[in-house]
Image (cartoon, rainbow, N blue to C red; front, side):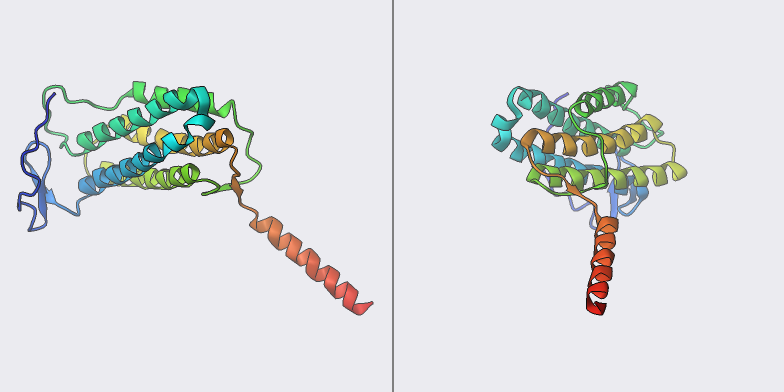
Length: 214
């Protein structure tokens, strides 16, 4: 379906209200706007990952095109999620797309394939180790926030539960992506070691105390 945007600013939102799909006007701080605004934020971060991705083409080898396509598909799916969230439950339009089990199964299949290439975790991971890893973790945290906002919205209004399941699966997908990317690029994963560090510090303190008494 062709979409034509002829004018970006309209001045219709200057009083703190905005229009949903179908024309219904709601406050800009409403849960529905917070939901699709957070999805938009998530989409922007994945766009950053796609922008940096060509710099690593060689290291991804034969998987570069399929991974790039996966990110492209997810960005488009997120736009569909945002469009669905911007549409009130009592309104519909021709060719309106709603998230379903197919999109969820695709994410799960991709996660299963990536997990075959990475080692089981022995500690919690921290964001970082590489540029793509860091941005994927940022995307994951925003995705978790989007899920929370969607559940808050669902307490107030009827929304498609498959949409929320998709957002939940996507947050898992982004986590697995971050680990798979680190593996493929040969970059380190930052691991949480607080308990180990405290234990080591206490051991060193006891050793120092014994030495001072001798």
